[in-house]
Image (cartoon, helix red, strand yellow):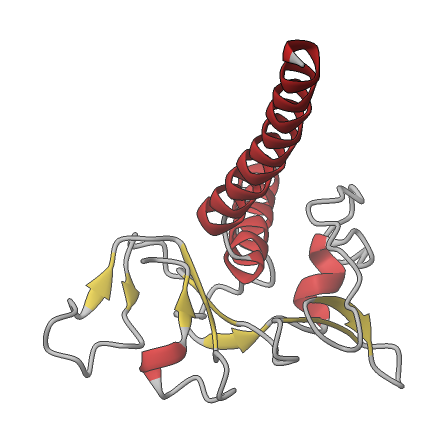
Length: 180
């Protein structure tokens, strides 16, 4: 009789141990996912590092001219070709500064349009907005500066933002910003 109770308790203990191990694994996986960087934020940081890498290699920002000041451009076309070593004029050393992941279903990565032009899109399928400090003063006008709580300029060489879920880069409540 005592042996059967001991066996039953051993089985109950084993079942509880397996259940507890499974629960701990699921909980730690959930915590890991909630703490990781959002994919769009990681993409923006990778693009920023690529642009700054180009600046270090060539002692100028990509597509810079002598008269250019900060202006907003999209993450597509010539800029991506330069950073991906597909433009001999602006990247004659053919340095690969950026190697993005492919988009899935037209969202969250690199894709080519029907004419073969490259584009880097966020997880909502919209290109990122990029502003580069072409005049070299170390400041970029904050595109969100209409809000009085934000400064008028940002101390940065490159800023990037996503239009967010609504796809509108001028509605700031859902935009993902590289500088925050």
